[in-house]
Image 1 (cartoon, rainbow, N blue to C red):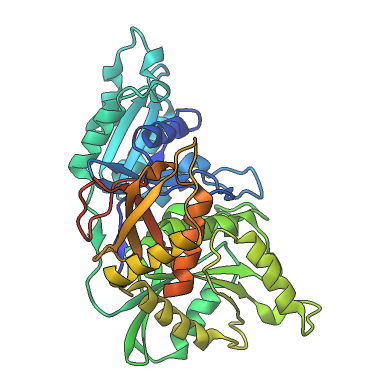
Image 2 (cartoon, one colour):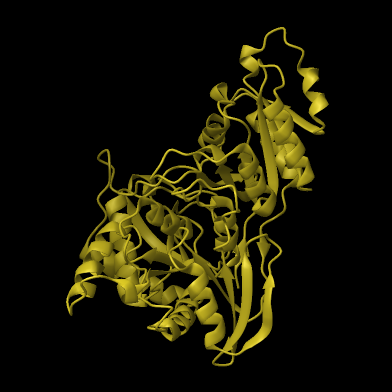
Length: 452
């Protein structure tokens, strides 16, 4: 069972204020996903909220491979948004005449068939300008904003609420959905094909509803397993030699549809910042995660100690997901491929584990007695009791107390580590919500934001 949040993509030519709009919305509607200390991922996407409606916000201005400075072209931005976003925001400048690029963006966005908003930004610089001229772009919903002054942001979010699809719960079947994600050329397609052929396919490979997400359904130990492959992200003639680009929106869509994600990294190109960014996307989406070192058969100068040495280096680079298991595979030799089936099923079972309130509060008392919470600003938090959310696909726990906003991030990490040692949850992120005890709570309903 997986939960898919709607995706809103911000597109437009350079310097129209896409990133400023992105930041303005997150400043006003605090991102649900808190940034942990020690992570360095770029803020090109965030989970946001408006009137209890949650959605992913993607800033296409930030979509690029950190290894180079080559940005996507306008057309590629729109194609990605048309493929996988649920709503497209086209941003233009109020104080600049309509340019040919603006017309192209509007035309391609409308052609997608998705809900499209025209955001006329920088209205603070457009005194005396006739803003009715933007009607000629053919987009019906037009909102005037000044992202730097946060003007018009509330109206924009209200308009979004009228068209945004609610977070959809996938069919409550027993099928396990696994997304294969990673940079280009790390072996995703090879692994997809090997996994699909490893077991008897019960449904022929077919193109997904989202372009370039291929799907295959197999049966393993009496259970249906669906694989989602995001490998086909490059289009012939659109890629410069030596330049590889990563489709964030498409990968995010696959991640949202999955229960567990296989994040591949090339054994010959480890410690790549983009790999860490993708792993962060999986964590932020609340999905199960397996880190995979692919192409193990091609590793040079291997000896009996190579794997252990590499595992330590990888663990140091992925400290923000210490709970994710690491597997070395080869699609050519089949090494550890079958193991991925069992590991993914085990992770899915861990994610569905429910702990009784009695056991949780006994554990909480022991954790506090062993190490009482230290606060900030001379305020000492007190933690009284905790419950597990009953219908959240992510293992999530509410801890009630007083002065909880003063709890240091290191204590949160301590509690999560101790929780995992007691109850497991290997391979899955865990959410801990700290709330004031006077706040009414209801099982299964997440708070809109984490107190921090």
